[in-house]
Length: 240
Picture 1 (cartoon, one colour):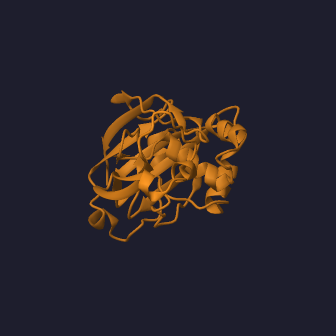
Picture 2 (picture 1 turned 60 degrees about the vertical axis):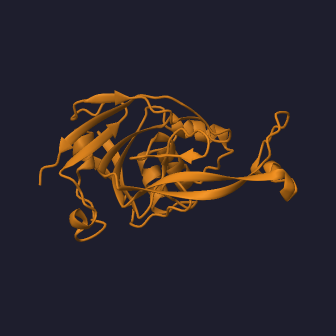
């Protein structure tokens, strides 16, 4: 199989999961929504371009090799919100803030980040894809929009190094030699002896150990709507 492989590293990353109230947790690895957003930014697709956003979602499948999930860190923000009004409906943040200060309350928003996480990503395309792997590789090398690790406050700290490889399966593809982010990355990033693989579809050379159903499959980027999907997982001991 032909697979586009690239790496993700940064001092901070935030892979959003379903959030309730003021708490914003992060997954330990990039999910489908985050990776679709990364490719869309590289291609220059805007969030309100629903047709091309849906076309991209139907064109690709992802696999992730988690070399390190990083350390969890948490911070908090103070956020202004309008006072409770059951009759009011706000379509945008601008509408929420269109009040005088005496009609605004302040709440605390807690957010999770992954510090010094390192991941490799594999992309395969479907039969009806509107893009080739070469198109996606070029978009990652020269992105139209800024790329980041889940939040705009989490920039990339190492080159993506995208490359197209021929492999018998996802494990072989994601184990291809890539430039290290640090010459002593195993020591400084605390890389464990075992790695986690997450993938969609058939990995060919990985045995499914469990299957999860994250709610991160894109329905509408503009309305911020997502649905559940099937994601397979396996933990494998790395061979030096």
